[in-house]
Length: 514
Image 1 (cartoon, rainbow, N blue to C red):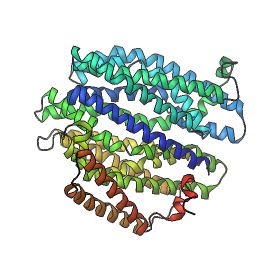
Image 2 (cartoon, helix red, strand yellow):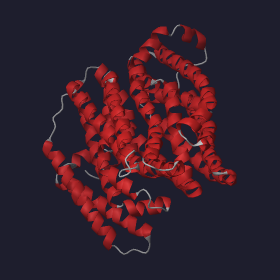
Image 3 (cartoon, helix red, strand yellow):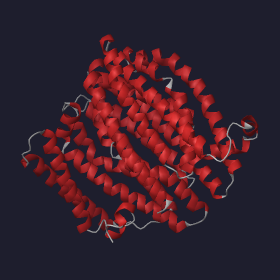
Image 4 (cartoon, rainbow, N blue to C red):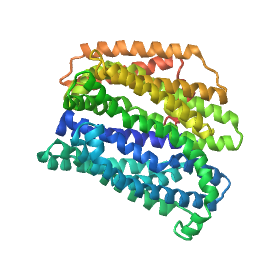
């Protein structure tokens, strides 16, 4: 089994566990602090992501790429130099931006977000920045080695610690007000990330073949060439992420101001934004752990093959990733659209986001497709093209949100349509860019078959949820989803979108399918 496939499977398994644990977190938060508290939490979260993006400077992707190339040449001095320069850069930036965020928090809360209560979660989450900065460097190192276990286990550990603390902290702070409870949820995130970092550092010390602290400053002072080499990939890569983060930073600001134009009060706008980004979007993004796993494994795998001029391997891995993203994303779309109402009731004890979930679900297949395409662009030194695509998508998204959300007939649904428009456009632009570099055969009949399978599975799922008579909501939902998934998989085999030889590549199925 190749390192690429093994790493992808490990990350997928960890991603599934992490997402499930993350949903337990979200359920606890939603039930303790409600739509308004979730709104406060989600309005401030994009600010944190923006600061983290600037702090990381796109280095995790660059580290992964150059470590993979250095290890292919057994150049451990180069690996050490990469780590020294990366750690020095991210730590310096995080020590500048952490106090900066704390000082700017009152202005952001009162002026931009128009809700002074957002100050408390903003101030509470700031210390997480240097923790994530160091973690990202170590994760990039392990990804470059195509050893995905430490990153996978650290993600699970972070979620377990957060789950343990989140109910305690939100409940403890809730008597002081919703804003303090949201800040308590942020504190739980900090402690979880710290536990994850401690584990990563321990694994790094066990696995590395050199002493990082020895001659650290000498390596740093001699690392000018390495710094510029890293920046040649990191800056264009962070350009795409930075554009996305800036767009996300402005998103809640534009939404609440647009809703105000439409006649929605600030507190109600906070609730509606909480339903969109705290209830509907997390469900839609749940399946993206698969495409995240593919993307993380693709960068070093394609970089290695491209450096060795194995162009057929590059094409094969790109086709593998895109096909897998499409087929797994398809069942996610079916389940989320068809079972939107019972899922919302079960997860959040609310049906507030059902309409938003059903509006966005059919288009999210483009979102699941986007991750692997972005990784391919980065691995083939086309991060600049990806950045331009992301910029175009961000401008269109923000503009669409403002135009539609400010209209009373659309309201928060206008914001949802703007988000959809943005990522659909970026995915299409990424796809066209990849096709210019990696010649791939597009089998139109396969896409037609895929659409037929999705539609047929949705019809069957709708019938099942309406006619199955189980004891309770959980039993009815689980039975309907299971039968719909089986029907979807059978259609994949019947129409030959998945074949026996595809499954034989998976280690634990290989023996059984012989």
